[in-house]
Image (cartoon, rainbow, N blue to C red; front, side):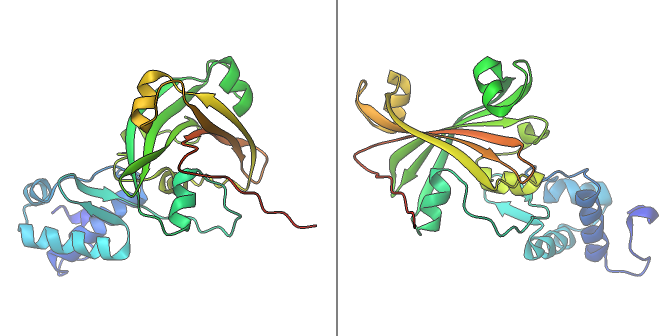
Length: 243
């Protein structure tokens, strides 16, 4: 290992590598949501035994800075912001809060212009780039909700490199310090196109519940637009209020 990458010439190699990886996370070379080099690549790059690499990686996994996903690799979790806020989130977050077992399958993740309609909702120009994500959320193995999520690129500039099969939208917010504190929601009934209807397991032409939410941070800036299409035969919406 290079001298500048060590924490001391007499330190165990796994400690030197642990601090090297930590430094690359802290300086932004290894970004939250992306995979670090494999154990084999790290061992070859720094000329140390694979066991030492695994010890360094395991220590950082134990600290919560890395996450190992079988068959995919080792991913950077990064520091998370802890906020005491009223819940502002999508269908999956609400199901998790209720202790339901959920599974999310991403159908689309792309960078596109906001367009006039979505730009107006997010207070962006029509040509401003936004990430568009479409995903299906299942509960107990049954598809229940289809989500469309719009995030301004300026708030999540490296989202294109994040594996959404590993990290949820809620975790991605934490990565980038996106902290919604309030939302403006509307609920109506609509129909899905045939392709989306198949993904949700409903007959084409059948009505589904559509919940649209624009989320805002503490400064009043629009940070996210979500449209959640939910099967009416599987879910109900409730509102709690107090005089």
